[in-house]
Length: 77
Image: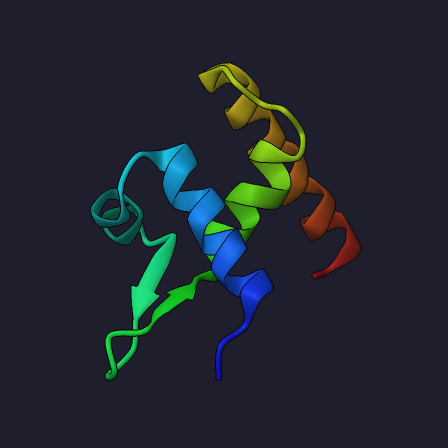
């Protein structure tokens, strides 16, 4: 089954990272047994927490990751 929204999300991720191979290397995408690309939780997290938050510098990315982890720990997630 083809999901247009899923395809657009993967295409956006690849365009931001630079290549499909780099997305696979980082674990943002994976391939199933049929060589179908799947967005991983890490890839979705990158799009939500980094791209949507407009994080562009490494210190900002670190701070966003730390804040999210700290919040989840406090909430017991």
